[in-house]
Image (cartoon, rainbow, N blue to C red; front, side, top):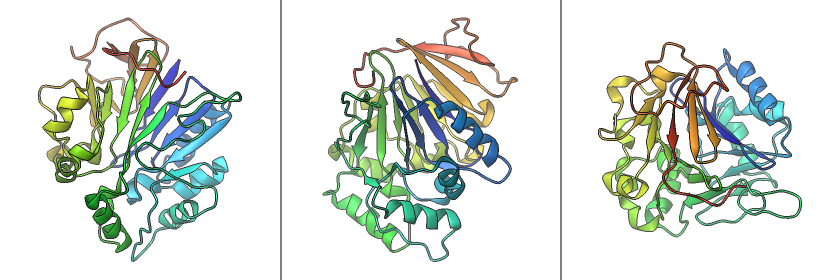
Length: 301
C-alpha cells in the first residue's frame, strides 16, 4: 500500500508520500507557526518506519519553502533534492536562507530530466525504488536557462520549477508541476515527455495563470485534478475533468491499493459528488470515494 497526502496549508503546498518501499518523500512545505508542530509530528509518525526520507523542493518561492528550517531541524534532513540553481532574493527569509544552505550542501542532489538516483528511482539489494522520476528540467533548454537567470537575478522563481512523477507498480501515477506558468508549459511542450497520469496536482495552486494547457492535458489525460487553495476568484476549474478543490476538502489523503485510489478528506462537511465511485471504504475518516486506475504502471514496488 502507498499513501499520498496533500496537506491543507492555505495558499501554499505541502505533500508527502509513504511509499510501498522503504522510502518516504516530502514535496515542498508551507508551515506557519500555528500548524508547523502538528504537521511535522504527523510527518515524523508517518515516516518512522522508513529507512530513507527525502525532501524534494519544486522551487524556492516562500509558499513552497516556508518553515523549511523547522522541518529540516526536526527531521535532521540530509536528503535534499532541487534543481541546480543560484536563486537570490533581495530580502531573504530564514526559510530561503535554509533552502540555500541545503541546496549548496555536499549532500544535496540536483535533479534534471531523466536523472537516475539510488532509491529515488533505482533499486538495489538493500532497498527498493521510490518510483519517482523527474520529467523536467531539460538543462539545455533555452527557456529554462532564462528562467534560471530570472531566479539568479531575484526577479521570478516559478518557471524554474521541476516536474516530478510518482508511479506505483500496477497502480496510480501522480504528477507535481510546481508553479509553472501556462505560457512556459506551452513553450516547453516539445521538450518534455508526458504520458497518462492518474492524479495531477494543478500548478500554481490551481490559479488560472498556471492553467495546464490543452496540449499537456491531452497527453496526461488525468483521471482527477487536485486544485489548491488559491483564492477562488483566481482558480481555473478545468471544465470537463474530475476535480477536487482543496479549499473545500481540506487535507486530501489518497490511499493507493492495487488499481484503486481511495480518497479521504479532513473536512467532514465536504459534499461528495458523483465524480468518484463509492467503494464503501473506512480506513481513514471522511471517505469521499475512489477511482480505478485506467493504466498499469511499473516503477514503485
